[in-house]
Length: 82
Image 1 (cartoon, rainbow, N blue to C red):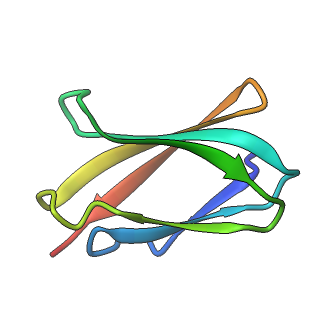
Image 2 (image 1 turned 90 degrees about the vertical axis):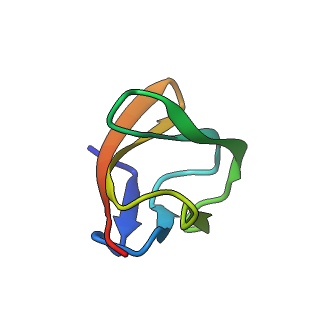
């Protein structure tokens, strides 16, 4: 079960990650189709907290969002349309 919701998707390079789980240390990575990490941030995510991610400077396309929290890894596909 995923603890995080990502919206909107597709987006213009700016999207929100909502934590529906408990407070925890979280690492968020965005990777391009070649597997390169283009965004990486770690922070303490409170329960029901939202974090806005801005990858607007990157090209349109499909990206993979990896969210690591409490020893679990979630993967979301992000579509950027400009």
